[in-house]
Amino acid sequence: MKENAGFSSFAITGDKTIIPTIVNISGPKSSNPFSNSLPIPNLLHIKAAAHHTLKLGGSAMKNFNKISLVLINISCLIVLSFGFYRFFLAQNFAKKNVFDINAAATTDYEATSVKNEKADTAPAKKAVAVDSKSVVKGKISEKYISPYTANTSYKNIYLKNSTDLNINLKSLYESKLGFDIKSGSNPQVLILHTHATETYLKKDKKFYTNADKERTTDNNYNMVAIGEIVAKSLNRNGIKTVHSKVQHDYPSYNESYGNAANTICSYLKKYPSIKVVIDLHRDSVSGEDGERVKLTKEINGKKAAQVMLVMGSQSGDTKNFPKYKENLKLATKIQATLESMYKGLARSILLMPRNYNESLSTGSVLIEVGTDANTFEEASYSAELLGKALSKLFKKL
Image (cartoon, rainbow, N blue to C red; front, top):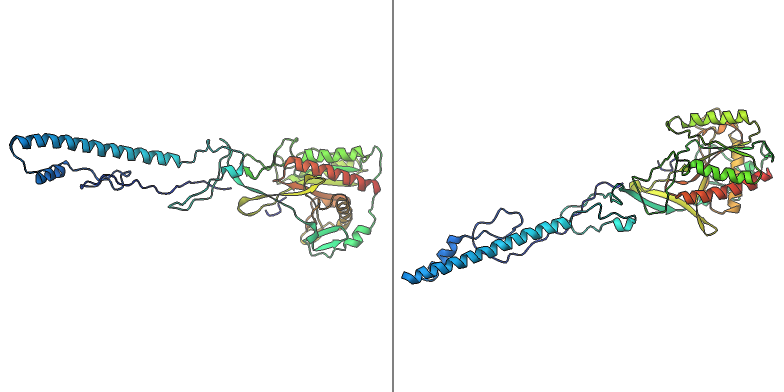
């Protein structure tokens, strides 16, 4: 899901460099673009000047002509040498100001940002290369979304109500659920993933590239891996849990909720003992200019990805969901448990005029674990904490 739902080509321009004129001989200026003010020497003008200055005759004049010719040739060689030197400088200067993608390869965002000096034209937005195949698309920022600014709250339960419904959190939290969780061999919990291919960054960094995909079919790095952590925690604590690893969003993302609904109905039919259905997702939070936002909370000295319960309701255009409050009762108890065990880990419950397949049972919740800018390690840690909190709660139900 998206909370609020990179850079183009990079040009580097240095200061204009002007090579000072050393020789100034009258004559037409060169069309050479690298000789800004250096004219082409005019031999006839030099010789005429010599005759005008020294009026000699006979053999003396012949000797002077030879000497002057030698001097003129030497002068021409000097001027031409200086012209070639200017051309070399100009070429070398141009080469130094070309941004070499391979030379700039790095995994550090600050190292790849090139300071733009004064230029004749304003630089375009930049896409900085980090290796020969990857290009930086945008920044990653780290934030914490406080649940305590929610528009509805009761004790340590916080809810962002995005519907036209009046919600009494006190009544919901204090009401008994319509089911009990029992220990034993019969499954009590189903974990699945409507968007199973949602994934995370493999390492912590300040930018993301075109190589950092938002989805992967590799179950070692997508929501299936996160769900497996929660499922194992519940099973270790005596809460029999089944985990569907079906990738409902692949190959067709648009059919993901329909596919997930079929899976839920299939499991509920096969295991009528199932009381709770948990659909684990990964969120996506965007900033300006393609910025991705990672949400973290430090728990016991370690960064964890923030989690959020997203609940549907019968409101707006959503119909045929009369028992949405049964799900909301469970959501309030889950958040209260998370808040008491790991303060600030859970964002506010988000109540929406949607269904999310939650109408298929009276114990359904959708839980977002982190965002696409969080690392897989941060999400995995949150899954461990979530598993412990759910185990504690379910043992009391």
